[in-house]
Image 1 (cartoon, rainbow, N blue to C red):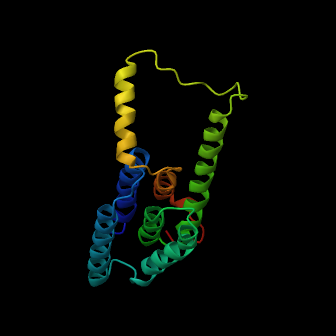
Image 2: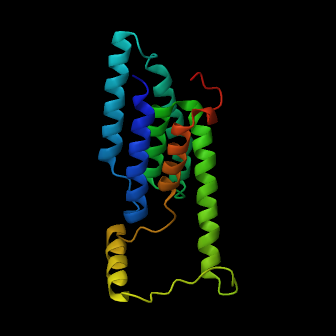
Image 3: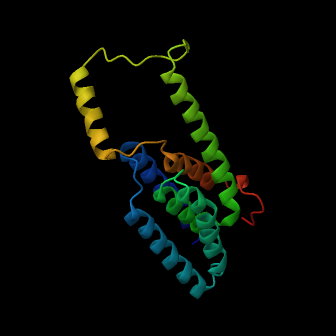
Amino acid sequence: MLALFPMLTVLLGALVIVSDLHARRVPNAWLLSALLVAVIVQIAGMVTGEARPLGPPLLGLVLGLAAMLPFHLYGWMGAGDVKFFATLGFLLGAPALLPVWMLGSLLAGAHAVLVLMSRDPRVACMPRIAWTRDRLTATAWWQRVLHARGGRAGLPYAAHLGVAAIIVAMHPSLIPWSVA
């Protein structure tokens, strides 16, 4: 029954990746829905004796929230990133938060380096984007993306966490101190 949690993590991660890349948003409805399904499955598993107590998932949620909340309070991270990380703590457990955070941060760091390099005209190894075909359609698409973002800038950190969460959910051997 708890195999549903990794599947739910993969589904939620994929949704968050697309949404964060497109609009720089992590919809609360998706996070609450995932938590609600997970809590219902957890309680049903506890009633039938197939699941662990509710304590470990709640510990993961609280640790995920506590670990990322200071970054949000300093303005370094959006609230959606924090809530997504806390939800991942509930779904995957507290031990999974470390590899998700490390891998997600490495991906975000690589993304940041590429963005900075692409802005520097002295870096000749970076390909320049040139619209050779259908420039009008590409421009219209980009305008829709910018409109969806509503002025929100920055790296899509939740998308990077989503990629990391999918990898960790599909490879539980990456989780330290795991009993699975």
